[in-house]
Length: 479
Ligand code: ADP
Ligand code: G6P
Image (tube, rainbow, N blue to C red; front, top):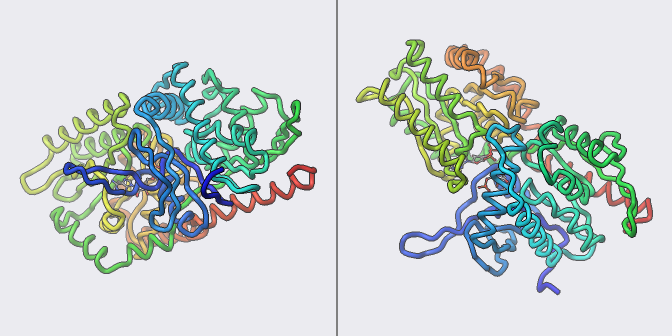
C-alpha cells in the first residue's frame, strides 16, 4: 500500500520540471519543454492531486516531492528505457507516424516490447498512488497502453486519456505493426480526447476497421469479453489551450514591455521583426520558413535593413538521428542566409538554440510584428495562442499553418500551406504590409477566440465529460 494516495492523478511521460545538474554538480529543477507542460501546469497548480511522470534524466530514483504547489511523483527510467521506449518507439516510431510520416517511422520489435514494459511501469506507479474510485488522466502518445493496463488492475478508477498530437488517418495508422494493441490500450479509457474533430474521427474509424465495434460519434460501444462487461467509450475533440489570463498578465508587466523595446533596439530597430518559436522538430516547418525568407531576400522583395527574423529553435530529442540531421540542416540554412545577405550592422536571422524564461518569451511576442507558425503538422500549437494572448495592444500579424490544430479556431490569422513556398512568400509580404486597421481587426477577433477557450475551459470540459461517463457507468450497473 502506498504511503500517499490521491483522488485526482495526472500521468505523462514528462513531468513539469526536469532535473538539471550544473558543471559544479549542483542539481536544480527547470520547467520542461513543450506544450503539454505549458497547458497542464496551471491546471495542476489549481487542482488538488498528483502528477506522475519522468524527471528528465536517466536512472533517477526520487521520492515524491512538492514543486510550485504541485505534488510530483517521479517514475524512474533507465538509460536503455530512454533509448528504446522514449527515443525509439515514442519519438522515432509514433511521433513521425502520427505526424503524417513527415519523417520515416522506424518499426522495431525491441522498441515495442520496451514500450509495453515501460507503460506497465507507469500504470503500476499510478495504481499505487490512486485512491479508491480516483480520477486518472493519462496524457499523450508515450502512454497509450496505460488506460487498458490501469482498467485491468483497477476497475474502480475513472480513466481519461488525452492525445496532444494528431491521430493519423487509417491509411497511415494501419502501417503500425501494433495497431490493434494501441487501439485496445486507448479503449481502456472512459473518455479519449483529441485536439481536432478530424483526429477523433480518425480514431473512431480505426476502431471500426480494426475491431468492428459500433461507433456513433462520440460513442464507441466496446462489447464485453469474459469477465469484462460491455462499456461505452467517448471519443471526441477537446482543443487544448493556455492560461490566457496568466499569459496576458505576464505580457502586461512594465519590465516585460520594457524588455520588448530593448529587444527591438538590440536588433537595430528594423521596420519589421518576424518571429518563429518552435522546438527544433521536423514537424514545425522551420526549413520551409527559412526557404521562403531566403528567397524574399534573394529576389530583393525584402532587405535586411528593414526586416529581421528571430528564430528560437528550442533543443529537443537531440539523440534521435532525424533531429540531429534537422539541426544541421537548419543551422546550415541560417548560416548561408546570414552569410549571403547580412551586413556588419544587420543580421538577416537571429538564431537562438536554447530555452528562455517565460518572461523573455512574452517580451519576444510583444516585439514581433509578424509571428510565423508554419508547422507541417501539429496537434495544436500553443505558441500561436501565446502570441495572441500577449498582444493586448491588438497589433501584430499571425501567419498560421492550416496543418496546425490551432487553425480550426484561429481563422482570423493569415492561414498558409507551408509546402507552397510562393504562397508563403506572398503571405509574408502581405503580413508585413498589412494596414493597421486590418491588423487590429484580425487580432481583435483572434483574441476573442483565444479568450473563449482557455486551458481551464479545456480541462473543465474534459473532466465534466469524464464525470458524466461515471454516471452512465453507474446507470449501467458498473462500479
Ligand atoms: P510543442 O508542444 O510541440 O513543443 P507548442 O507550440 O504547443 O509545441 O508548445 C510549445 C511551448 O513551449 C510553448 O508554451 C512555448 O512558449 C514553449 N517554448 C518553446 N520554445 C521555448 C524556449 N526556447 N524557451 C522557453 N519556452 C519555450
Ligand atoms: C510535445 C508532446 C509532449 C512532449 C513535448 C516535449 O508537446 O506532445 O508529450 O512532452 O512535445 O517533448 P519531449 O520529448 O521533450 O518530452
